[in-house]
Amino acid sequence: MTDGLKTIIYPVKDLDRAKALFTALLGTEPYADEPYYVGFKDSGQDIGLDPNGHARGMTGPVPYWHVADIRETFAALLAAGAEPLQDVQDVGGGKLIAFVKDADGNLVGITQDPPA
Image 1 (cartoon, one colour):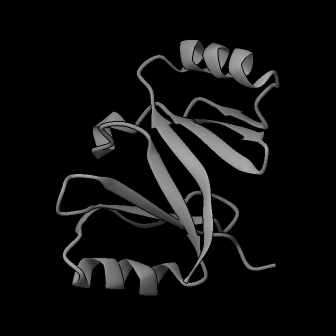
Image 2 (image 1 turned 120 degrees about the vertical axis):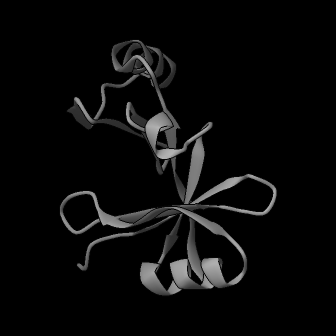
Image 3 (image 1 turned 180 degrees about the horizontal axis):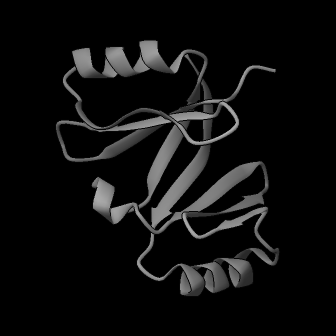
């Protein structure tokens, strides 16, 4: 079971240009602004810009489903035939992410928030 689709990450080649575009689109400054990731919040959604995404196999935006147990969900996706593209990784503060490719080549991300 998921807690919904609340995050989308865009692979970008020019982080400064992408940041300017999303700042204009969303009308707000990013909450996270690092050389490796820029993040925005808008209407309950996290929108992330990843300058390393293309190198990790991201071919376009990746939706991230929020799950209670990322390792269990990751294993279930692999058992269902998904191809792993990024194993479970802590991206800071206990937030975990992973993503896979389905049989049609679609990218599916999963994320688990840190314990409260």
